[in-house]
Image (cartoon, rainbow over all chains, first blue to last red; front, side):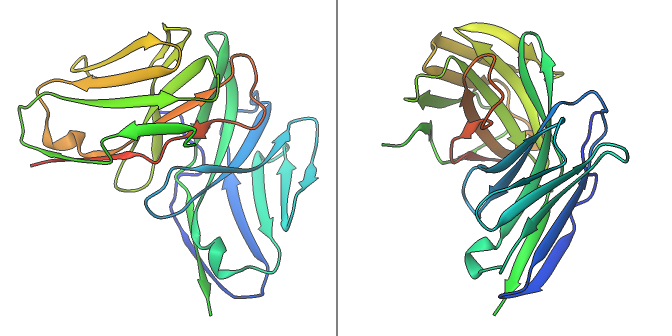
Amino acid sequence: GESVGLHLPTLSVQEGDNSIINCAYSNSASDYFIWYKQESGKGPQFIIDIRSNMDKRQGQRVTVLLNKTVKHLSLQIAATQPGDSAVYFCAETRRASGTYKYIFGTGTRLKVLA
Amino acid sequence: DTAVSQTPKYLVTQMGNDKSIKCEQNLGHDTMYWYKQDSKKFLKIMFSYNNKELIINETVPNRFSPKSPDKAHLNLHINSLELGDSAVYFCASSQWDRASNGYTFGSGTRLTVV
């Protein structure tokens, strides 16, 4: 079936270090990508997005990089904090039936060590 | 103030029972979704409604029947529950024809079938 990022790895980082979470997507026709953060017991929350005509976008403490050549997306978190501990999902967006359909990866668990 | 609210948050039921999950959004969005998240955190779209019209219907057993009485509500009814239906079900909403900023998710309904 359709998939983005087949594995659920765990990334452990020391508080204050930078984190890099990677994601591979499957469809070169996808034109919009989003990173979501899911904390325990909550729904996914939007972090940052990027369109396919860009290769980098920065937010507050987060940067998303897009490499369309190898269909790779990454999320960089600067100065990782305990509150960043969560599961992070990338999602690619394709237009389907007149609306946008998101295909989610399986996620990466980020553990921040004190 | 909750943007997308689901009820109940937890649901424990026996195999063979019929149950419903309700979802309401107060964002003025016209498109709503149901996603299923399995034990490995994989998020998969089940249904999408736009202005009460079904627009995305993935390969889901016909025991699952969504109902949208208006564009602010999308309920999910499940007949003859099976053990494999145990998962967290997320409702989400977005504005038609706008992928920007992604979905707004509810906090999920954890369904446990025993």
